[in-house]
Length: 418
Image (cartoon, helix red, strand yellow):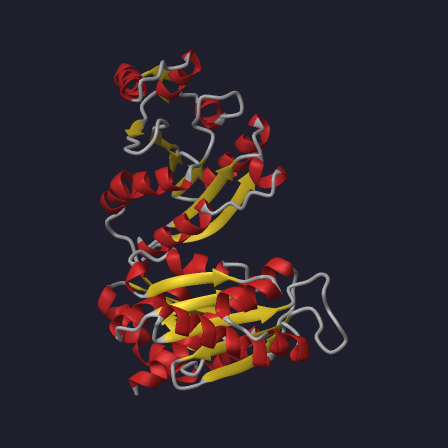
């Protein structure tokens, strides 16, 4: 079966100058794999006509599908349509229906449409419009030579909505003889990438139709397995034993099979076991609470999050004894245990989770270097404490500490269930 190649071009100087992270290509690559395509290249290019053209031309020569994001807005640096028009020889034509829709959108918001927004109603000749149900910038699909150029806005939620509503059905219909791809993800926490690799090394050899890749992040190591075949049944048979072996070898550090984040896993377990949680944070500054409340329905199990950064707050809000802090320091096992116990008692919850540490770059001592973090978990029977030391800058240490704290709670919930 012929491999259908796809490439992704993300436009926008903000990704090169302003430190903005480009995420659209990650989403699109995963969706293309689901649809049986092989993403072979993705790139980011600034708002420059020549550079955009130099990115699109070779991509179209190599791939059956080229997905281009960004540059469809009304401003001077929105260049995608202009460049596509130039390289394909398709002049831009004003679409009256699109213009009317734009005017209506502004009128519904009791705003007068700026004249420059009319540019968004210009489309290359003989292209198919991709409606934008959640924004003002429509996209388009244009068949040129042997490739389909699919242009979408750069705003992530608009791009995703348009891909699912229009682009996915188009690709399914246009390429009915695609191969079958099946992507599996195993999310782990607690082992270095090299150790995960050692556990799986022999499984990564000798499979022509299977690829195994690993990604190390501050929150753990993700293992992704891609199986390819002529049918769903063929791929399922191909992967069956392999997936079982991977799961068995990673069982002690595996927290999710699929894209689920740690906070969602913890939330689901709290809900399943009908347990309530209260959190006390020092060095993480509310990051644990932020992650937990990013999960819809978290009010069912999260009672409160107390950010007690100062010693005074630990005493007044959580009831930690001043002499305990004076004797051991705020960053210590006795204090974090008292924090966990204090927040649980005051909230009347099943669990109290606490963290205190040194995120840096200052505040360290020879005994407690930057990255030293203590964790406390009180379940009403005892306040257990643990210690970990993390590397990285301040943001990385905070993220790793929040992940470690949530993993401690996850393991406690699983232990209670057995």
